Each structure stands twice: as C-alpha cells, then as structure tokens.
Image (cartoon, rainbow, N blue to C red; front, side, top):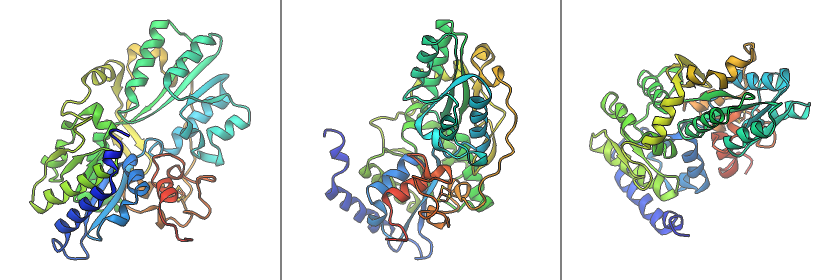
Length: 378
Ligand code: SF4
C-alpha cells in the first residue's frame, strides 16, 4: 500500500533499531537510560502494536504521556455529561470511546443509555448538528472533547448551526490544548513533582502538530533544554524520531525537529487555527485527569456563540465523585507509572470491563499495553 508499507518495512526497522543501539550504547551508565516521553496516545499504540519495545535496546526507556483525549478528561466532566443526559429531555451525542468511560457511582454514558437516557454515538460532530436539524423539537447536545485535532470540526458545526438558525443545538465544550500540558510536564519533570519522571526529550504529536505546527513546541527546547521531534504514527517514523532524539541529547543539542514533514509544517494549518480563534476563547483554567488544574489549557465558546453553549443553556451541579483509588490512570497520564504497575491491570480491569479511562480509549496507555503488550499471565 503506497505510503503505508514504506513506513512498516521490517528490514529498515531493524536497521533503525541497530542505529539507535549504536548511538545509545555506552553513552550513559546502564542505570541511566535515555528517557523519552511520547506525548500522544497514538504513538503509545504504535509502539506497542508494532512491538517496538522488543526492538529498542535497554538504553532507551519510553514513557507514556497524557496525550489521550478521552483519558485526560476528569471524572467530573463525565458525570456532567451523564447529568445532562439524565436530567434533561435531550439527545446527547458523543464519540464512541466516551460512552464507555466510567464516571462516578459506577455509571457511564453507555449505562445511562441502557437506563433510558437518549445518548447516541456519532462518528463526526456533523452527525450531531444534522440530528438537530432533522429534529427541531428535540434539544441536541454534542459532548465535544479532544485536543487541537478535533477542535476545528467542532468550530465548523457551531458556525453551521448558526448559519442554519438552529435553536435546539448546543455544544458541551471540553476541548483541551497541548502546549500548556507539555509545559506542565516540563515543569513537573524539572522539579520531580507529582512523581513525574525526568525526561530527556519528547516525541511530539503528529495530528495535533498538523494543526498547530512545530513552533508551539519551541519553548521546550529554548526554556527547558529538552528536544522535541514531531513524528508520524508508523513504526519507522517512531524509530526515526527516537534516533533523532538520542543524537540531539548526545550532542547536547535541544531543538524542535520535524520528522513528519509530509504532514506538518512550522505554521501548521493556518485556516483551522483562524477558525478556532473565531469560535473559541481560552478558559482561565481547566482540570486534567492526572495533571490537575492547568491555566489556559482549554477552550470555551466565545460569547458571540453563547446560544450554542450547553454550559449556559443547562444548569449543571458539580460532581463530587472520586476516582477509584486503586486505578492508577492519573499516575499513568503524567508518566509516573506504567500500566503494568496498576494492580487491576489485566485482572479486574480489561477492555471488556474497564475500571479507568486508560483501558477504554483507543489511545489509552492501558488499552495499548493490554491489546499489544505482554501481560503478566503470558
Ligand atoms: S489498568 Fe485499569 S484501573 Fe489500572 S490504571 Fe489502567 S485503566 Fe486504571
């Protein structure tokens, strides 16, 4: 397959792994491997799916980061969406993964649906706005989540709803931003706070970077001395990025490099950025699962689009639910623990019976490790 097979060539993968080993071996004491965090859950899945841990030498340790859009949403937001669906006569639309994430009281949107709430899975936000258009007497709310990748489509449907003059459509906006979370990680890692391990550099997200470009990552290199290599999701992309990171660290360099030049530019998608700026404002602060409250790290609808803001249209009581204390998702999302360090991993908690968000999402670290990794029982 053109442009896929080329990036999955096993012979080239072996060569890249050998080059990484060559660069890394002897560069550091055995107890101090190169530690690189892949911010994006898509990379975590690529790493496990293509068996990269078996190819990488022990001198390289990959740390899984908070880049799973479903996982970083705190329980209070899941509970708010459940509350919307249960308390009001409305149709709540969201992406499939969100429906299975456990909220408080052992509920999820899927269980709320089974109990009678009108919750529907959509493949795109456009489906939600069309549902509202076709059912003018029914309130439809789109539960919007995700990083900069899924934000422009939400902006499009808000404008579309306005153009159609819809009175029965709104968005429960929970879009979050990558650069503030990266900055949080850089600071926590430098201070050793919250168990965040020191990191030698970052494998930068690919889809997010296609929107925001490479420039927003420069702060990691200039202010914190950490290299970032933006890379694609194929195994050769990831291996090449790791090689580039090792070379930078060995040379004492810290810059942003772009391995994914076939999709990412320095400026990113300027049209999408303008659309986001037109529809959304920054929130003063926003809670991330595992990372806590991060200033200016999420978006809300601008006042000009307030008629489509579900938070303005519906009253929501704050959730008092607490995370399951046995679930290590918060620690996993900040890179402080790996999925296998959770006692529930692969026993009580499986993709069929997820206890935490990281086992639900197609980009979650626990789901990746469970689906493609080697488990204790094997
Ligand atoms: S294995 Fe399950 S319970 Fe443990 S951290 Fe992952 S999602 Fe949470």
